[in-house]
Length: 300
Image (tube, rainbow, N blue to C red; front, side, top):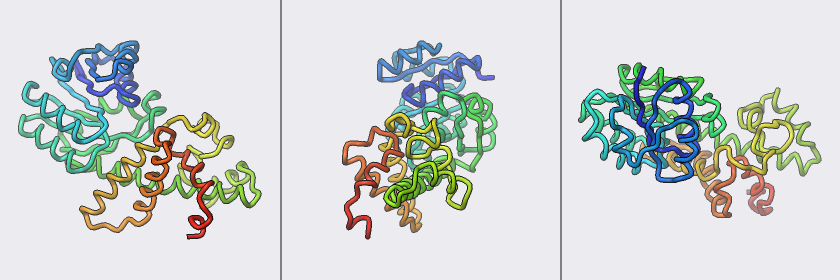
């Protein structure tokens, strides 16, 4: 069992993840730039320190959970020169595959095993310890990381070599973004045709339209009481983060020469949704924009 874990990035996802590690018996040294995040993590038993360098002092495992690839690379550049060879490095941020590969290269140059392990499950999953981890890295690195990841999640998958975890995450979230738009469009259409939300849910949830966006995260109030639709679309998983992931998927598709027309359209719609000032709402809240689409848009 890891003795000390350095945890850098204690926001809406990282804070609860670090708290679950404390609950599992690890000593966690945490750092974040935001005072409120540090206060919340401290209340959960995380030892707050003043810098990433202090967070990794004495740690045999380091976890980063940051907003973007550039920040992950910056932090790893800062810490790899001071951690001992053999220290396990885990990045659970959602970043582009190229950035993930750069972090692996930094770790390898220092003689440290590394894993890119982005997550699915949102803030609810982070708090409940029910996240899904998609991991990329060597078999040796994954074998060391897996027991730690299982303290924060219910499902942990080794998807392949370096960068494979990020590849799996952006593909998964492209499916999620597309399917949520489809479910939202169906409910918006059902409303205009006189269907109640419950009637459409009852039929589609046991028919060929069944999907996670419908049965676990229904975008209208009522049928799934735990969905953000019942809480005025408070996230959850913010629409701005969905847009970030869809853009990562589009960048990867361009680099790989893959055709993803529905992914591109989903990114366009979420960009419009964010431009309306709704990027901080849950991503299922895009139904409100789709309800109000101009007639020409609906017929296009």
